[in-house]
Image 1 (tube, rainbow, N blue to C red):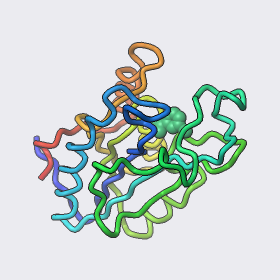
Image 2 (cartoon, rainbow, N blue to C red):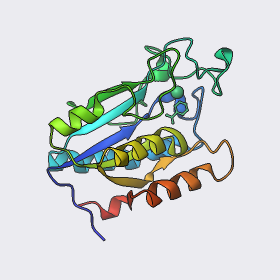
Image 3 (cartoon, rainbow, N blue to C red):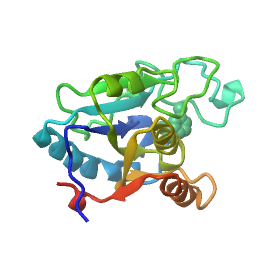
Length: 193
Ligand code: VGL
Ligand code: ZN
């Protein structure tokens, strides 16, 4: 089945940052494997003239999610550090709208909609359908997809362009099942026209 990019579609790239890739402080296993695929999606959205958003985890230095603060994660994606930069392999075109999240020292925010203007921006632009890929399947991708569905957006999960942390074996698989059960469609690059 083919899925067309139309005037109500936007591409949402989740947290393709250095710290989430091998060599970073919170590497998603094979996280960088999503990059060539995401670049192909980017090309298709550019050709269609459809908007592209890129979220980034953008934590203050002593964020509550960090181990020294009692959280579950090693410090990662600290604002203005190299680790917080988008991976250099990701070909973000000019005009990409950057959405920074989880800036509050005492609050975790896995979803790109939490504490951001993303929903308002999309709605203002008349966007109804979100194509979502990136890192990590079982955290920020999952929470962004579920929030998008709750907000009434149609969601296409880019299944060949997501990778998970899998703290527990099966987390990513379960996350994908939950997103699909809640109403997300799945698509691969060959299906996008
Ligand atoms: C994420 C863990 C901690 C993510 C962010 O982007 O999925 N995961 N912070
Ligand atoms: Zn984080």
